[in-house]
Length: 548
Image 1 (cartoon, rainbow, N blue to C red):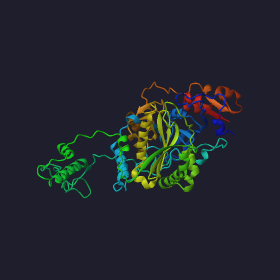
Image 2 (image 1 turned 45 degrees about the vertical axis):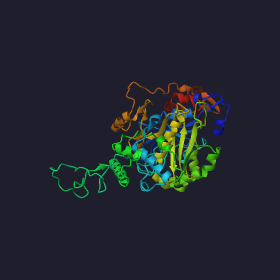
Image 3 (image 1 turned 135 degrees about the vertical axis):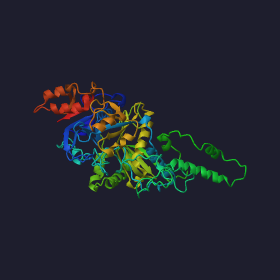
Image 4 (image 1 turned 60 degrees about the vertical axis):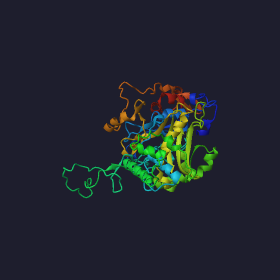
């Protein structure tokens, strides 16, 4: 039996040295994986098909961050230590890897409303206007079960499939059950709200609007509950109404002042500029880093904790974090207590194949797997599970306290993770993308990730990134599509030499060409060929494919 601890020890024949830009001082152990093959004909949480999903999977005993970066850039994704890849041209709901260009991200009005909502809650304890709002779908997690909320975790792997190598059974990824897709939150489709939304004027409106139609026009009385009420003024924008009311209030405040007194400087400026110029667009940092008043009602702290029981912060907060996970899963995804105990929590969100690494030109926190904990008044209310990789921050999962769902924590945490990516970029120039998992256009409830612009989708055939605006028309026509419109373009990272695939057999590293000659029994060439084609030539030569 092969033990993971043996894999991480030094002294293997064939070990590579430092891993380039991400290598720590000294030699890094190579990734060790066990390929499990294809899994076909199992239930899909996106479309509800009972036998529609097709994916390939492998168990990762250890993995470098560069290997995982290269794998997700070929359409792979991890759930715990299980790494899987949808077979795009065969699965019922193709899942396209999506990334946001964090350095150029522009928050939408809907995103800014979520940030403002959090600011109001922290500074004033204001929940009155949002207490009844449903939480939009989390923006980054892939675990799904049905296209109706709540969902579990699209990539969630069953307990039996994540067992040591000695256990002989096939891996299976459970029905995705999260937001019919994947994301972290409850299960409401993220709705785009607009500040330009209109509301009808009422008797309190300072300036009546013009009639909706000419006096010459003759209209039949509106039917109850249908159409506009032509007897009332034209609908007006809420922003215009608020502006007029503010001006009216300022003027009324001046009526009792001594004759000849001058308006305050800021009031005079406002009155002189009643048609104010559009505000300069704010970035997400303007909302996140805004100074809070001394008498703020709440204190929110975000802590980055390495996923390691050797880390004091991770160890001391483990019980509270595991309890929150269980509360979230049972409330939002309707799990039973046995489905979300400490073992399941550890397997799904604490066990990671990624080896922690540090580099001189990397972020101070290093690379690897982390929990980003959201502490409100000394209590954890949400945890974002992320991987920090050479070129990106990859969102893995989010769970939160359902009592605070009114804060739209899925969207809020996604925006915080984008801001965090930009922060890491200052020290690590290559790290400039935010990976949100999979985009599933064939499931309407999973399209919300496309609202984080600018973003790109990964071509399933050539593995090049394509702006999502160019992909959407193709996906409207066909749920599976090649995005690279150059018909002559091919997968540059495709398998070229099977014999160069690295194999780990009886604790010895060797190329497949040598292993093939030594192997006794039936040939496994078809399986190795399939594995190497999916991971690509570079990873197949760098990672170690375990063979029993």
